[in-house]
Length: 442
Image (cartoon, rainbow, N blue to C red):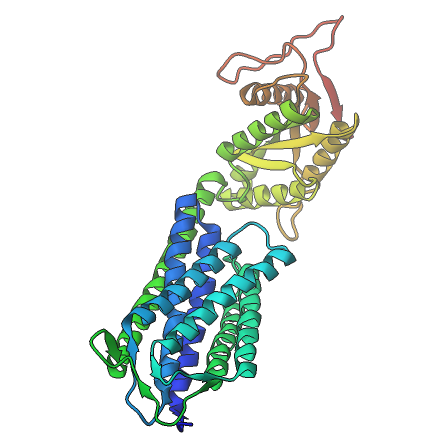
């Protein structure tokens, strides 16, 4: 058999390229998963798969260049391109699989088989591109070992890519996963190379018109690897930065800058969502309008910073009283609105009393306890209103009834409370029908 040898630095470079290709694959999986449209998802699957496939293919051929025989070597162009296509096809399939919503065990196991087949096809087509005469002799045990390594590496790659596909995945986790995957890909290549036997007197039949000399192949591989993988990672990084900026802008547009609570726009969406749920599934929910009593006096006496601190403290205490799914929003100034589910008949009475106690016991700052209170107005869907605008108006009207009744009160909406547009409020009294249910904590 012909003697063989390896350039240790080229071997190290091949493993480095495999790690880079694996890291690119994890980044592409993230972008394909978080894309906002089907077209964008497929763009990342196809583009990312091509970049990932090129990286795997480049690792393979750098490994081939690290391998030396005492004869001239070249590579058939058609088979070389076919091996590249196999690597890209396997990579596109992998990105499609990990960007799906779920990854049950059977899908993971079933998906590893075609991916491993694509990687193995890439490797053995690349070996066949030398067109050795006589043909390469293969050691069956090492061939099976290379296929087993390819299958194991594919399983680990799919599992890691699915687990780390979210933006929240830590960088060191992705680097560790990329290192593990790179070792698997490189291990498959060198295990496959160990299976090859070159009889004495072998010559490379690929030397001819439609072939790639080894030095040209080395240049193409290095340039292509650096450009394509670098471009893919750069695009993924830029797209992630732009998306993060858009999310921050969206968050700013929908949240109060002081308390970070939902603002009026987001509150409207939450109420409309609750209305849709009631229409589809039934049930009840309440809109609670909360206004701090004498808040202007706090600003005048202690300054606006003290007023801001008070608003943050009040919102923090109220949030602690809410159940999962309930919403607290700030409209502006000292006005807050809650959207809460109603399960039991006493839910709103108990919540209103707890809200009043929480506000009344809120300290303004250390070593200073400011006694404040709140007025609450409650409107219930579907009893009082069935639209967002009507519910807000009813809760607002009930809140003014509570405030006019002496503050530190809550009032349930009743017919006749809603005043005209312009925030005019009045209380219509009737001996036959009380207009509000009033209560205080004291």
